[in-house]
Amino acid sequence: MNTTPCPRPEYPRMQFRREDAWMNLNGPWAFAMDAGQSGKDRRFQEHPELFNLSITVPFAPESPLSGIGNRDFCPSVWYCRDVTPPAGWAGKRVLLHCGAVDYDATVYVDGVKVGDHFGGSVSFTVDVTDHLKPGETHQLVIHAEDDTRSGLQATGKQAHSYDSSGCMYTRVTGIWQTVWLEAVAPFSLESCHIVPDIDSQQVTFHPFFRGAAPEKPLTFCAAVTLPDGSVRRETCAAVPGAALTVPLPEPRLWSPDDPYLYDVALELLTEDGTAADHVDSYFGMRKFAVRGNRFYLNNKPIYLRWVLDQGFYPAGVWTAPDDQALRQDIERSMAVGFNGARLHQKVFEERFHYWADRLGYLTSAEFPNWGIQITNPAAHLNFLREWREAVRRDRNHPSIVLWTPLNETRSVQHEMLPAVAWMRIGLSPFYQRFVKDLRAATADLDTTRPFHDASGYTHIDTDVWSVHPYVKDSTDLKKFVRSESGAFKGHFDDEVPYQGQPYFVDEWGGFRYVPASVGANQQPGWGYCGVDPQSPEELCAAIRDQAQAMADDGEIAGWCYTQLTDVEQEQNGVYTYSRLEKGAAELFRDAFGPRPSWSAW
Image (cartoon, rainbow, N blue to C red; front, side, top):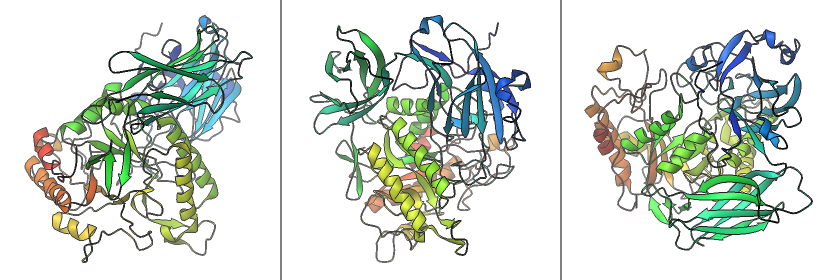
């Protein structure tokens, strides 16, 4: 009997919970490296004896926590384990959920292909009802192919060379988030888009359904628990396109000071009122908007004091070692004075967003766009499809206040026009069309958040104007952000002109400092700007110099400091990679503290 504790045992999807009928599949799986990509030819899915290794899911094979620790490229990997759905699930639909599998995933049950998914960052679901019989044991196989250097995949900060170097780090292949089974009714809720409206004092639910509708119609019910403990219920017919609005007079607003979350039960009811399906969820009554050159939270101006968070962990790479690590990173950030973060070049785990919701932590949801060749039509399609999946999955989280699909778009090679070779990306009609497609796709799914086309560099169609001034002091910072006439400056001449949006200094700082207490154990590393502080006090003085200049400007809408923790050889974090303090929290709170008088937070 296997008595090994299940890693990452917590329920992964807190905004859509069915915790009474699920089975966590994390833990030991049989595993095979398929360097020659011949596993399909050899029909690995039918031959469990070919799986000669063991891996701990949900940790990628590159990570120490996986038990593999492979540092080379993994073009093809295979996972296998037995699953026995509970006998009590008979008559239900059985769903296999994968938090994320990088990149091209295929699912087999007893050697038969039952589903697939293309994309390495976002959750997906496969209905395995016709292949898994409750009470019986079946063989589940997941195959993942991952070509980091193809130009067709969004890889973010995963290194395209053998070694981690510069600002490119350890790769991630295959399963890197929780895998679980879930039993649902034959006709059930697939998802629900929750749209708060603080101005009209109401919240609207847009349910989406899975399965064939029964002959006798069902009713969709949303039961919202109010702050005083009472419950407000509203119902409508459970039909495609349904929308249900629940009035919330004098709502308790979600904010960093009071991150209040309303609990809601979502149900499908039969004619006699029996719940055919039940899902627990939550939402926050909050509004984030752009007005002129400022950000507004709940109709009050807010100055963003954010930090860059890359979501890397020494033992788990892209996967946090445990749920506490996700919460603690947010708490560490807030302890030194940040009110939010850029979730940089990665789609973060749903549990991270849950803790951000709980703790009142504002974030910009980003996508790992590095690694993709935008002018390749196949790459364009891959990116757009998965970006839509990310927005759809995470749009209910009140902590997410910006959509930022791109980062530092500079130049592009025209694969379709080889004679042009390399050119500035803003001049490329492919890139301009790509950004407009991204904006349209985002607006189709969510109209409640500003769209930030690209953090830093080439802006084409954006609600937020961002720049990345890595400079050594406030004098150079002022020269970077403003021209001699006093106007705000961008990065390149091929951007659209600045049109009065919030001017957001979305990366700055990056000063390398390694405390003497840990320096002997550190590998050689780097930071930005040539600033070389020798103590926490010197580091914080360099930080405050620029933070004060931005607050004094009066028209800068906020900033994002690089970065929360060191990542491998990049040693410019407020904390070390192992999350040790580089100085007292109060020193950093003072350094990051300056803000303009107009900010309500």
